[in-house]
Image (cartoon, rainbow, N blue to C red; front, side):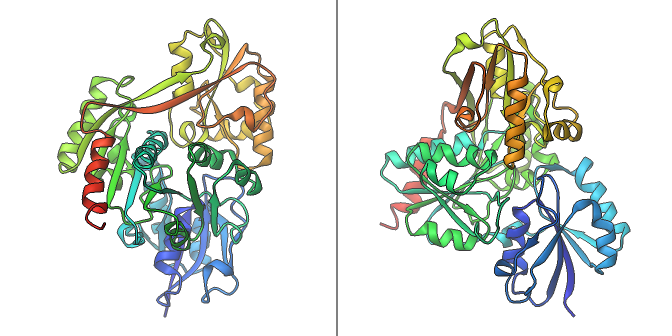
Length: 445
């Protein structure tokens, strides 16, 4: 008899776990997915076209709140936890108790068994928490390698919030591709910087199919991770970005701890804004738990186009959505810029919230004076626009990775904050990539 399995997810790692460990496996019967973190993904199906011959009707996706009753109703024997950036104490342990009280076994997937092997060298960029600095690290790695003449194709962690069949394999090479695929703000934040630098990004749902397409136009595959998730591809060089502003989380949050314990290189970012104690905590944890990893020290350098729109102004600060919601960050690039360039006041957005953003602040009660750039759909994007435009401020400081003014119409002066990885001393990315090239590429040529 096949074992009944339920997969807990958030429209990303859960589908990859199914595809690599359960699709076509007659020893298991995946009876349901549950969904959380991301709005509007429950009540859907993982479609038959992607689920394979064993699931001619697809697999239903339910709200995570129904977990206990689903276990009993569908006679679930194992529940697989397959999403990211959650603490063991406050998030995982309570759900583990629900599962076990309902009579099922709670398990984590074996991440190494979900790795897909590439025919090309793979560099993976991961993190210990959302908002640690993966994107700026990925951008710099791609820039260094392209300057050496290598074709680098970035494969981004999944964010499939639309038609899953249509999103099986997606390729983004132009800004028009973003529009054509109805990308959310969260997707654009990750894809646009690669495109702006002349690169190509792949993403979607079926990551083996994605990899085989990416390999056709790449010398090197760059895995650009999401949240603090593990790579989907077997890495030949594995980076993890650690955040001393949240020191200790590298061991307390899942599955960022897997990245921290197994990466070849640990990048300690944001050293210019971190305390000596925070930096020391990460160094001590690295020495204790992953002493073979090389350590890169770095700052997250801030660049502001028009600082005069900040100085002595009452400003609204807009930050990256996931970073200041489930990432729990109280500051971001926009906040640092507002403080560094002497804003008169950071204005609380809560009196001006519209629509779904009201629900966001109810769910994440400790966001504070930041406005997360939530945009998982047209309604959220419009609510973000309306909230910004209703705010009683002199100007808007935008700390998201993209040009938000290109996506929404902002009716007041606004300034964009850029941030780039700035390593301190050696080893740095350039020296590590030279070693990688010598080891993996020069030998094969």
